Length: 128
Image (cartoon, helix red, strand yellow):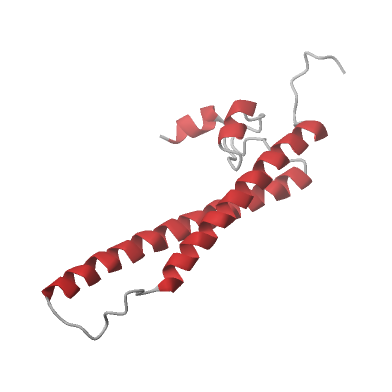
């Protein structure tokens, strides 16, 4: 097999490199999700539930908004983790790094930046 034939998949060595990147990103993502979940389950730490007043209402409003933002971040983080885990499955199947639109290999640089991607740059640009 000559060197000039276009590769149809990444080698096992390359797949292991990507796996290491993904596992590291997963570890960090899970830690962040854990921190977000702790924030959410913490609830109202100052225990001012029985005191009324305008200030309290304003505080509740901002606390609710904060909680919503934290919920959104947590949901996004969960989706990111799911995508990374799906990428690990593709590594096991040796289908990792193959664009689902073009069937060509996704550039290494792109995969290192966005390891869970399933689209090459050209396929992604076509979407817009």
